Picture 1 (cartoon, rainbow, N blue to C red):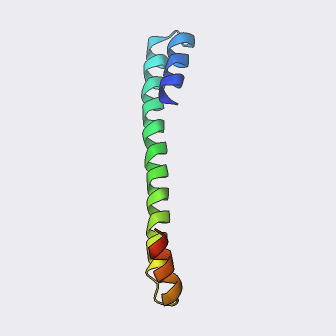
Picture 2 (tube, one colour):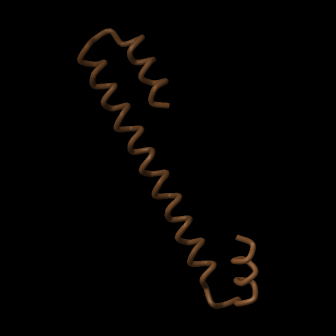
Length: 68
């Protein structure tokens, strides 16, 4: 995504200041998107581990751990 947008900005934006600002904004947007996705995956992973370690269903937990 970052490189594609960078090419579009470099090709179609003529003003140097606007081009620089958009390239910086593009980089920050990609970093923010990466952080958001990484935190979402981490939250899901933590919830998955909490679910597996829950002592409510011992037999099913053993089977779930065995399947991993």
